[in-house]
Each structure stands twice: as C-alpha cells, then as structure tokens.
Length: 74
Image (cartoon, rainbow, N blue to C red):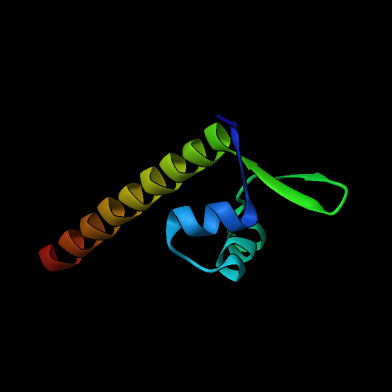
C-alpha cells in the first residue's frame, strides 16, 4: 500500500474534482510534493492538514458565538 495520493486519487477519495484539489493547494495550503510534472500528496500530511483545518473552523465558530453573546449582553 502506498503512502501517497495522486491528484486524481485524492479527488476521488474526497469526492471532489481535480480542480478543487488544485484550489486547496493554492488557497488553503494543502501540502504537496512535486516530482517532475507529477504532484503527489502524502497521506499522513493530508490527514494532518484536514485535522488542522477542522480545528481552525471549530475555533472560529466558537469565537463567533462568543462575539454574538457579547453583543446580546449590550
């Protein structure tokens, strides 16, 4: 079993298009490695990236809820 995905494999795994994978690389810092013209994604790095993004979203939502509570108190 390989420890990396190709762009096409990752897109299929995540049920998104290859262009979405490219967007995640550009705009959201999805870690990747380039070998000549081939782009690959290490599975462990992808999993950590996903966990980090999920943690950041949770923190963001908690902060927004706290701001809303403070507004209601005023």
